[in-house]
Length: 565
Image (cartoon, rainbow, N blue to C red; front, side, top):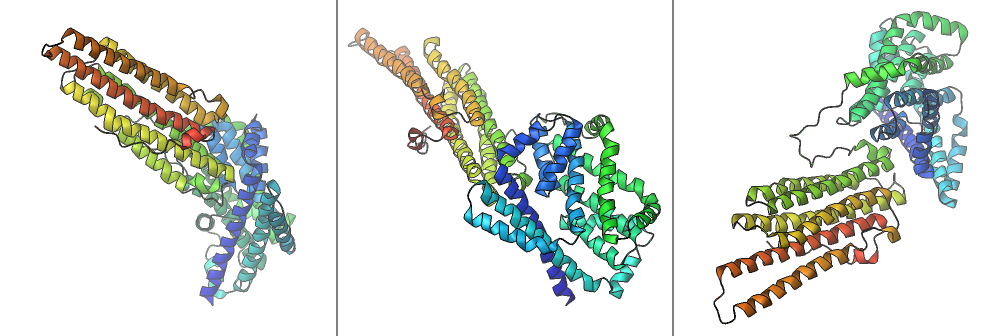
């Protein structure tokens, strides 16, 4: 029976977490980008940032989701560290509001929430349908907590459990550690605090031990963002670590005063459930009041403790910098933004490959052009990382526009990798072959090749801008680039045939000289380079067309032909 009860308790906690998840995704789908825009507009000063964090967390029922949005804004340079920490202080207070609500007997309205949510979900569209998810999630939260408390009630007077809990009396540090571990395992401070409330109400544990467990729950809920967040982004680490340190220091400062606090709260409020809920809220409010004036100094301290690491020149350029898998489930919009930033790096790497190949054209050293190969490998690694990352996006969490945007990014990456394939398997081997044969294009033949290469670099910059801005098809600045590359190739081909005709006339009846043969071979190399550069541009234009809506011409391009070396 004890084993079945444990399974039931675990199911209740899982139902609670799923209810929180439904509330969070419902709000994010209903508000979409407006939630991030509202968040960015409401962070003018620390007080506004505090209230914004409180309000959004009260709606989302997840301080982790609020922290992810704040981290995304801070990583993009839209928010300083001090206001970000103020938002987290507000989020800490916001998470206590559900405990305040549940300290009253509100479980009877849970079926009404679920009924309202199902009706909205089945009979509405758009934002109203997503609002139905919110109501269903709220109902599931209330139902899970009622079941949780019902299952625990018969065990509150068990001698074995009473003996274990009694061993922590006057051992507040052990109680704090136990509360932190329970919250870290369950990923929910609400479940831990409600568990403590049940034990305190039944008299299983004294109020002092209950308050120590609540302090531990506040620490435990701050551990998960530190362990699951990005380990490479110093901004994210400063926010999560800063929040954890504030709560740890606050708990250690209050621990010696717990006997006096428990005695005071007993005189002020006789109800044990209200005592636990009020202490939970007052603890976070007190931290916010104390920290708000000192946030600038605290932000500077966190920057010193977690400095921005110097650029690691030995690290592979194909290593992802912005892909945080925690965003996939909790904030799909931010996850897609991170994938977009990595896709822009593909443009930078391809531009570097073209620049390295261009340097190889001016020398007879094959290693110059060969330096482009590691960049190609980096592009392939980064492209594979982006594909794997976006494949983890859950369609149930992301909206339809977000999934379409993810597909556009994947198509963009595919075209970029087709372009890289041409450079790596055709252009670079061609330049290396010329270098080994001591062939350097003369200025008149080199000029069209350099013109195409420079235009490709310019087009890559435009392509990256389009990927961010999502301009309309009519405003695509690359729409006329095919004509430029075709005209350059046609002009070079015409010049080649004209030269052949002149040579045929001049040496009519005479054996062709070695110098004439070398000129013909050099011109052949030039035409091959121009052809492949034009193919590279075709894929760049195609990549730019996907964020614009994937026009018909783009869809007909198909995969890149297998280049020959």
